[in-house]
Length: 293
Image (cartoon, rainbow, N blue to C red; front, side):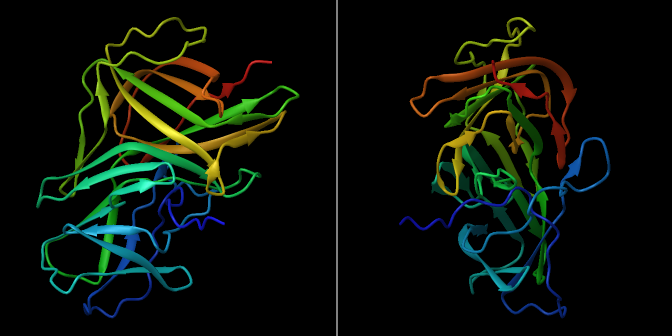
């Protein structure tokens, strides 16, 4: 039986154990919570929020494993050669379980490229899911606490199945369109971007009532949909699923979403004009996608 060890929980909360003010080669992990777009509140109403033991954080170019020393208290041990300043990047380079993330460390000019991510539901109730949300922390001098900031905004999507029959969703491809070339986001010495950004023609047939996409530039995002570390998400009849994803663009004029069945035929396509700016560290609710009856 395959052991599932990877992917991060939906969002990272402000978790930290007590600190005695001294540095003994152990960092306690903290993170600024993401806010809802419509309120100054963290996004935590129906989501289990935590770090995941066994994942890696990149510390000045070295991958270091996250540990749960006591319940709810997460740390990472730094290499003995680590010196200030410290740049911590989450997640580290990974290529497994539907995640393809590449980190290139360079002092003050590191890059994190998202090639593909997985959305992994804990079980078939779809109450909790896991997905990487890129973050970075910076210290000018060594301290026992690492405070992480989100490198992206977030979008919350809901897919509703009003039919009588269950359907299997294997993958989702999302396009975010804008009036100009997407600008990579930089924070704490790290620039994050999607691999496919620029002039992009959408794949699949866009079947919405809003007409064809006319924007010239786009950011393409690919997500493997999983349940318990295994491929596919089953959406039962007269039910829905909701998931959140990180987005690197700072504004958009419209978006398009195409869903694929396990055989890679198209399950649905949806496109909507929606013009707005996007801020780092905020979660935006997107219009509900309803499958055809």
